[in-house]
Image (cartoon, rainbow, N blue to C red):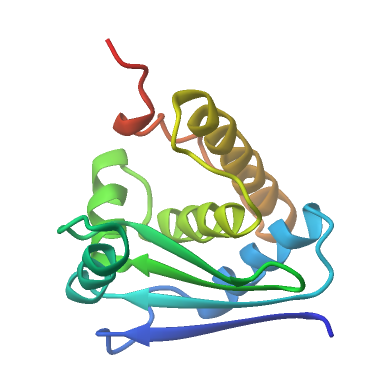
Length: 160
């Protein structure tokens, strides 16, 4: 078995970026992490869909940017839900293209599937640093342009 990565839409009529970019970003991270066998489904979801999942599984009643569900650890089988409307809001907030933010979130979700966590400040810092390294490497190696580093998310700031 190889790396099987598929893209689905939930509550959306079409994909806001070429699906191949998301597939290749996930494939890139899996390969960098030494994973040769995996099934990953990426679901691009609207606010309503991702809010319902967030409420049902995490008891958070608001739309979020990404949710990852590991269905089997070995070989890896995971579903990554990306909130496209939330991604759009974040892209505007950070002044980055929507495509970049969606790729960032697909990388973030993949890292969660691989066991990375962001519950504590130190975990979040480590995970975001790895996410941004993979994002820059992906854009430099797989796409013909480099991108600026996004500032840390508000939630990653150390408590005052």
